[in-house]
Length: 439
Image (tube, rainbow, N blue to C red):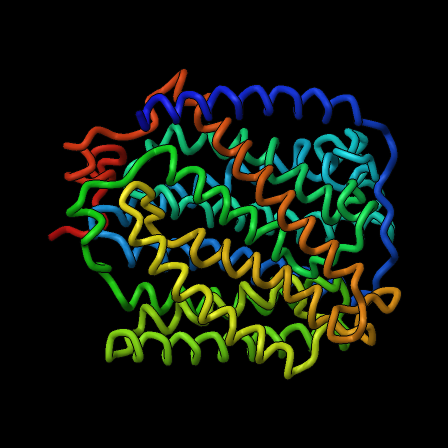
């Protein structure tokens, strides 16, 4: 019955994928990206922020790998590395230009194919555009890395590689264009996504959910296995926390008061999320552990991401606390589902914090900090709240459906899962011939 349902959903999603692809191509035009010039100090801050965001990628490998069995550490590192390759090349060849090349309704143009014109002359305008493109490239890379955790320990390395190629082009790029590149969501609705609550966290969360649903659960013993290296989890999470200062702080594109505010509200929300998680875990289990504490911090960070530069301290505090509570119970709920094995809580953590943060943006954003004085419900604004709900729903549905279509399509041409016996041995040895530990 489940197999028949998967096949039916796959055919529907595949048909939708074909229709959407045709619509994208029909919308291509040929204009050029223009950005306001920045000072040398702004360039330095964007480059530092880009480096901080890139640091989050190996940090995620430590965070993810430490939570899995020891025989899966190499495979997670390998998948994160191939994500860097795929998403970087995709972004340079056509991802950037399709996202920001024009303000087409559905997709951008190919005027900056392979960064055409981006490196010419070294003029202030081209330097500014290149710095922006590099910063946004790191966002694409970290988003691809996040989704890997949902299907960890059971999807073949070759399959995940091809999945990232198709997902980057058909899911990440169009969604980023709709939100940040002048597409229909930002053109038709009032939508704010300061640093990627919708584009990154919601999208990664629903992608992870679709992957976990399609590939099925791991072996019972693998699901019940304890995290093999808590120090890795701790160090990776702290690196993610620091990297988030560039992630959110750099998203305003200038070294100014908004950058300072974004860093402050991010840190406050992380601390509030961690505190809320501690209370929930102690109330539920009678103890508090390190894995839970750092997960609570990331819940707070994910929640504040879409509004970090647009809110004050009380709002960041509330957003972080609610984010920690929602993610705690969402993860418990997801782990109780026998047929959906989101191995590293991609939906429960990133998806739920992204949805909450996007809706909260429509509630708590202050017009004193936003372009055009756009404000949330607390300050009397209704349009933003409606826009955030619509954008979150559209991106959630689209991301899930097209992800499912992509993995279904790949399953027609290649094996998606490793065999049960190989899963028991571990991908480190079976696929990479390189265990992370000698004993």
